[in-house]
Length: 197
Image 1: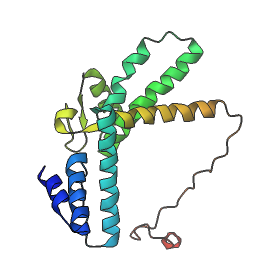
Image 2: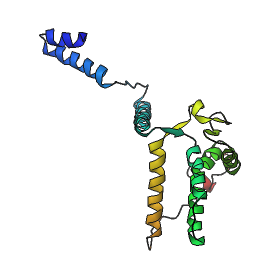
Image 3: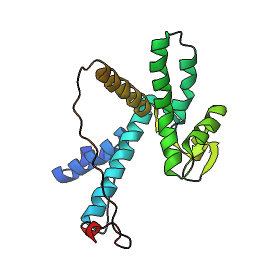
Image 4: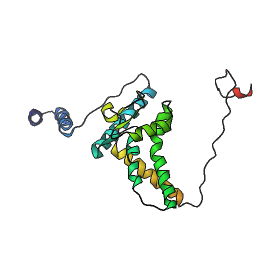
């Protein structure tokens, strides 16, 4: 009310504009985030992280959250158990099952653990129980703050299914062969051009 009264009382266009801006921020939930850093590269990196966080927050507000770390997809596996499918279709269901386990398996592997063991332990748990790669412990991931926006997890699964169905109906695909890189000589640190020593 005070800001609205000041807007009506002021004679300066500049003051009116600033007061309207302040009111919009308070009423509309608008915030300004200033990102600073020592170098431009560091600033761009920080800005990208802030934008990712904002997008994740918007997605979470829109559809809610699920436990992160690949646990939500592992919890979806029980929905596949009740499917009555032919032997041929069972192969596809098994592929989807393996694909849903893969994010957790990769997270565990990146943390230095055997992915299949971690997946089995999480499968045997319930609810939000999962593997926290930051602490290398099994715990309630929601309480630990390891969460994903539901929308992100859902769209990732939908997009993966879309690409897979596209590949299944395609008669021919073109892909690049992975290049085999030679390891650098001992002591050369794998620097380019050092493999000829």
